[in-house]
Length: 388
Image (tube, rainbow, N blue to C red):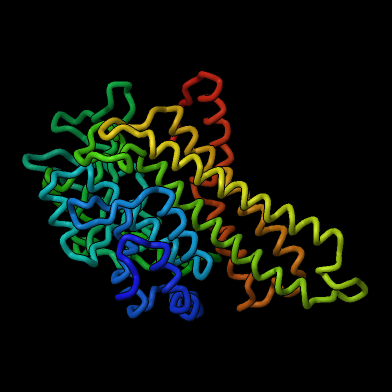
């Protein structure tokens, strides 16, 4: 790693590509990241891309982040997924007390994992909160050094804490990973290596200093254009990067197949007008989606204020560009899987695992069709009821 610059995550990702690809079968069968590969990911600082420089992070631009995660996803989607989740969780650091952030991220191998909010409550008590519950879909929890729980808050008088508009307030509570009980629940058709397992805690006390909220970007303590983006927006960038990487790898593999394969009773795939047209459309679909997303991210980053959060219109632009990229990648993968014929259906092919991975990704909240509706409402001057 000595020849690779620390602030160039794309070069790091490319340098690790052979190791990531070689570990694919082990990742698939064990549903875990091999320890030696995890060591290399940490050495490459690929888990600290969005972490503030004040706590030894690299705080790179959203566009550079997209390219690095996309490159990893070309070789293994589970590794890329866990990288983007780890970096997304690190985005809570700007909302924490500085000493708390330093405590959590002083370890160069620090990783935070958590599941999405549910009905669990954090009970306010003197000095902090007590929490019990179970959370699911905690990608990366098997490598985590700290865990988190997103909860509604029950005040000492029994009322539920709300925002000024009446929405329930969601608090994020952080605690060392060994204080959670991990449950081996992640046995899915795709993204198996993410080990997105469940976990529980029972009557756990979390001091107030180890809590924060990701819902109010205006309250961040770190300056800089990266943290003007919402956590949910950058989360969507990560999902888009994984999707684009999967689709690109399938499209590259299809080019080699088309040059060699002659289906029974038909001409060589590469000589078929339908295949030629489909490949051209696929290249344009993911290429245009990728370019549009990179353009939107650069424009917003370049014009973001140092302390203020991006406005609703820019949030909508991020949401539209990420949703378009995710959907474009899924559509491309579907066409490639179908047109590769029986070559798609055997384990170990360039299509079978990636097809399962991208259709596991397609079920995640960032892939919802409803995002188009919410963006359309913003473009038409309306305020969506829910806007992630």
